[in-house]
Image 1 (cartoon, rainbow, N blue to C red):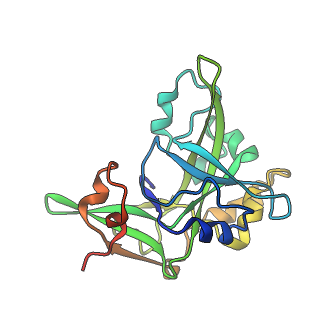
Image 2 (cartoon, rainbow, N blue to C red):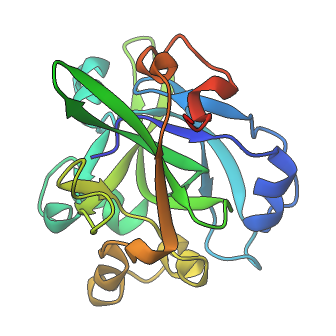
Length: 223
């Protein structure tokens, strides 16, 4: 699964990596938690203009009667995303990228859990495969929200958890974002686990355990 992630890189480097015209709206974050707002990227291609949209983490289906359902929809299993009513239409029409520098997972060690930070070996930005939707509250105000797709864990993540977020390779950004011509057979290969050799993990301190902590200690490697 993916229950906590970070965007612990300068906004300018994020904008350059995703070929955005501006870094406006991108905020350096060390401990992004469910129900919080986070940056997502939309746009069919570089030439069509990729843009940042700030959305709430935890997808609220447009047909939902209340917002609290979103807390249970922070992740969507890639294997069934085209079948579930909450995700079926967003998978066809409302795909997005969720920029990140890495994510967190926990491993039980005795009576406690040790948090780990997982990122690309090169320390470069990465993108989770996301879906978004627009819900309207009882006062007629629109709320946009998103979910992160998950897949089977690779060899690096498996000792910690049996699921991991779907990480889209840069060469596949355009394909994932292009919702103009839906072709499930072209998208499915993108949902495989990323090669473990491209990633690294390291233990971090207990600060990340609380969503109230939002500073560089969360991603600092334990010696």
